[in-house]
Length: 318
Image 1: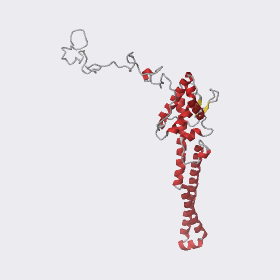
Image 2 (image 1 turned 180 degrees about the vertical axis):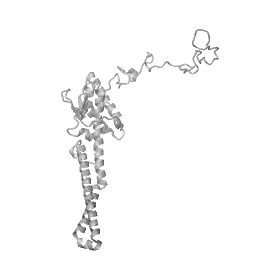
Image 3 (image 1 turned 30 degrees about the vertical axis):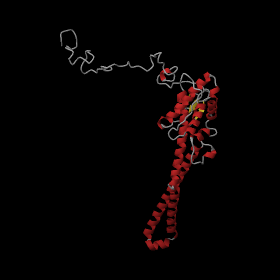
Image 4 (image 1 turned 45 degrees about the vertical axis):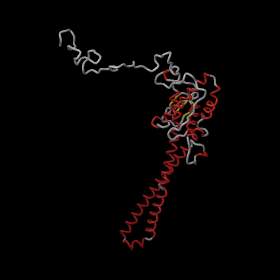
């Protein structure tokens, strides 16, 4: 160490390995940092120091009213009308997406709060989960029918029964042909096969009954006249009687938006965009959907919340 009172080694000349590209003294193993020897801009959000000659676009993130990083933002100038979906998302068509949008818009809380986004996600999840539930229940039932599980079990049982009855109905004949011991063994084998065939038939019947019951329970989310239709859409789910009351309300608020006062327009615009954003995120990502099938209005908190339910905004989910 040099005797200069410093803990640093003697740096020597500018050609020394301890001299960085900027002329500053630094250890050779230390990262140089900075923007390099050329000219650089100070890292900061675009528009954080607005130039009056170059105003920030009013609808850009930096130009939006009450900008908060990481949160869904809204334009400082409210649109003249609410914008619906115009393109399909994954397997879902435009019309059914918009019907779901009306429904979520009508079901979520009327007032904007911190729970609005998770509430919208929960409502969207119930709709998409119901469709998945019906699709899977129909698939399971149809697979059993296609595989002829019940019919094959009946045929096997019939053949086993016929063999057993034939052996036991003509004992003298088969004892003479087979001998007493072999005849007894043949009857025992026939009985075992018949018992197994009966068990398999009962199992097949139980599977068909369970699959059919699951399908009926799932299809209860559809209108009665649509339960026997091979195909259905999100529109059928949200318009089914007694299921989502929000469809008509949401459609009405959408249609009357242009006649609302500015305060109500701002509130409904935020609710609309929150519902739309939730649909866009969950429609193609089943892993992000919440595990809810049912929900009810909590009647401003007066409804008794069960242990299996969760309260989000103005609704209780399970």
